[in-house]
Length: 63
Image (cartoon, one colour):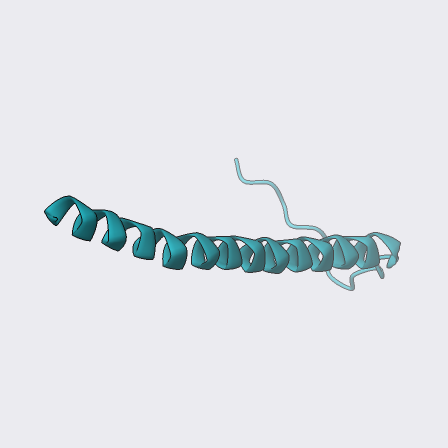
């Protein structure tokens, strides 16, 4: 009898855990993918912008 109770609790936990784990994994991947796409877009924008000449001279290297 105790085996059946433990078995039922294990099945119930699996039925809750597996869909929850899948959902959290997929949403995390989606957020990560959107963030990487935004970073790529910003890098492309920075690469296409021509740097304007600075009114200040470059800093002297430390010795």
